[in-house]
Image 1: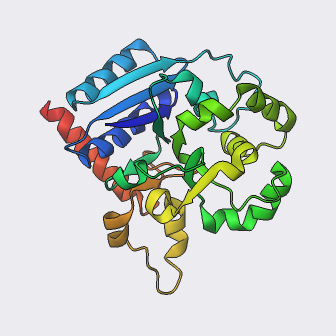
Image 2 (image 1 turned 60 degrees about the vertical axis):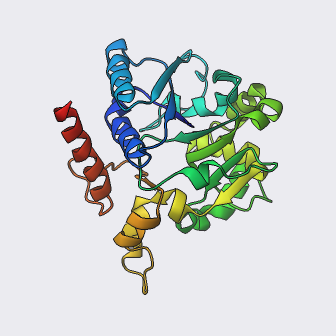
Length: 276
């Protein structure tokens, strides 16, 4: 059984369906418990989502969060209040859960998550990947901005394996809210900044090319000599492709090459629903 956490509003339900389909399809012999944190998803959308997950022989557990919980946190552009909810996962999720994998809805799963999901935490609270090619250039600025001079990296929180047991012992909501209040004018990628600012020394690193492949990097890498990460390599080895940024593969104007994988799962899901 895999525990998956998603936090979103109703606008992201279509890509969420594609993400879930990609997970279910690549794990035909496994089952998933999907925990959905939200504040305002209509009942009809939740009913449809329940039906889809149940038909796939998996389980959906919606958790409604008070929309005022992060009322003082900055929200702008395509960042919604729901992005903060993962920071309180250890308090909002059932006590019996020991670990959970948070995933942004703009992701598709390409291969088995088993190895990553079962990675030992040791003394870490989170396991995540750094988008090295982009964060390397801003590393010094991030250290200064977030006051983390000893941080070894700046981790993307779109794929985040969470040690719920450890979080219950050491992650305090008051500390999170205080950090937001003191730094809200500095937050660029808000929830990500908070996690890196507070817990930079409790994050275990994994390679992004396997576990959080930034689709934008592929467009850049095509111009590099002896490029290792071909479409064939990605299809065989990458576990998660992450469509970061404002341009998404479900938008008509999206031109990124790796959108082909999203479209494959989207088309397959549509066929499956027609058959049902």
